Length: 417
Image (cartoon, rainbow, N blue to C red; front, top):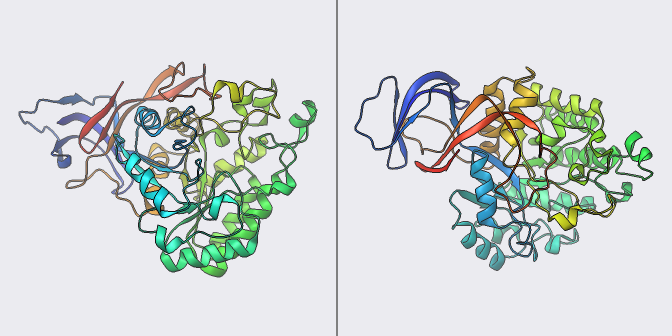
């Protein structure tokens, strides 16, 4: 396969150049101008960008237990449509991935995906926050540990988990929302929740747990990932902790840097998620965190739900949205087009930095595995359908900029627009 006349954006080498890419046997063999070979597959890259295959460290593929919402194969279809070649799946399935038998079973299913699906294990047994799992036994088969979907409220349990994760050199990802400070999850407590006549999720629910875990991370030296930030104050807290030497990464979703609590005004349950969309001031502080490096990673928190689960009164509707198929476009539309980030910086937060968290390879260089996304940064398109089983997206019907044209995994085209 030859990709001709393509603009290459690679955060690993800081390469930004127009060249051809020759791929053979799943590996990049040459990168230079005017490659001439007798190849069956030639992709015209003029006017397009080639970047490393995107990496999402936060997805819910709902298998086992909730496959009416999504399964590994449909989730993988959504991923490749969005340009992702590697995803990391959360452990809050039914039953949860909290023992070695379940972990080996789900890895066998993950191996059938057309892309690389990596698996986390739970931090606590049954996701109950009471007793940590046998992390040493699980670390050979899991890439990290998380109770995502639930916060671990007991600081002694978090401390113990961090100490064990540090000993094993494994990343620990944390969902930061104290349920005792939340009346109605998924909606920010503020002006919009008051208009709707409900109490919501106060930003303090996130801030107090982020502050606690930043201090514990400083104490233990553990590799800690703070998941799906929504509060501007939490960005400030993480910035401080990093300045003190904490080994912390932080992630933000495309919906949190592109939307605000106003989106739920019409009881739009596709704008309901945990943590909730917050004020414009919070959104801008998230963007500042992306710009100054406080927030390292853009991750989708791809969370499929059925129409029935979403088509309810807002306090009863399920929290969460899908995001794999729109993530790159939302980043281009709201960050690059608005000149908050360069395209190199955006790709870095969707490839290199996620790879660092889980010690993965990435990059477009000779000798490396050919995981590549090709996209048109200027093409505008309207979100009208999904390859996911679910359609719970607030971007449905919206025009976005930037369109994935090809996804290549291991040198094979797994998606073509």
